[in-house]
Amino acid sequence: PPPPPPPPCKYLWDGNLDDTTDQKHCPPPPPPQPLYDCSTKEVWSPEKAKWCCENGKLPKDLFLKYCSPPPPPPPPCKYLWDGNLDDTTDQKHCPPPPPPQPLYDCSTKEVWSPEKAKWCCENGKLPKDLFLKYCSPPPPPPP
Image (cartoon, rainbow, N blue to C red; front, side, top):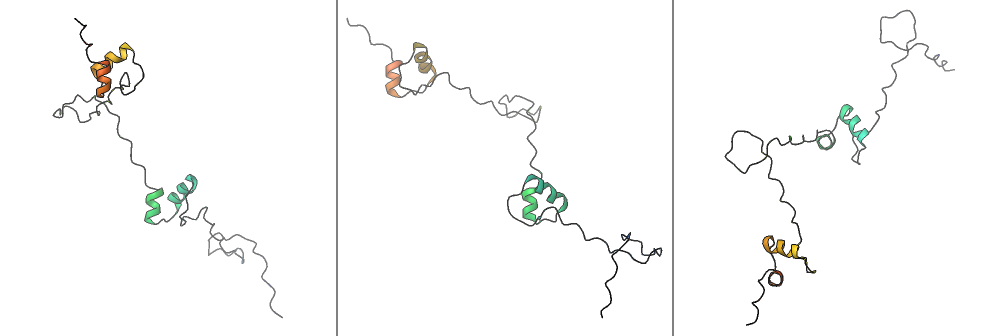
């Protein structure tokens, strides 16, 4: 008959090979399975990306995709740009502010108020028909 199976391991192996107080050492437990498979190409959750960046050996493309820090935000602008390109008193110029939105939309064909007509005649680039309608001086009175 075959020999009986060994008795179950009664002691956890502590890594000490010189320990002679008992004769039965358990083998080391198998390594834990990784929490995530970092070799897959599907879209990763933020948790998987964090874990794989901290624990996984990643190919370059996945490392660059998930582990590279995002570029830093631009520093806050500290100076208003005065339009002087030769100004060397500071190194950070704010870009010029966006132009203000026009007070009126001068491209519409609805009936204009006198205020809109005055503003558009002074500020708007008008098509000829609207210019003639709203901005031309009135014809002289008949003699």
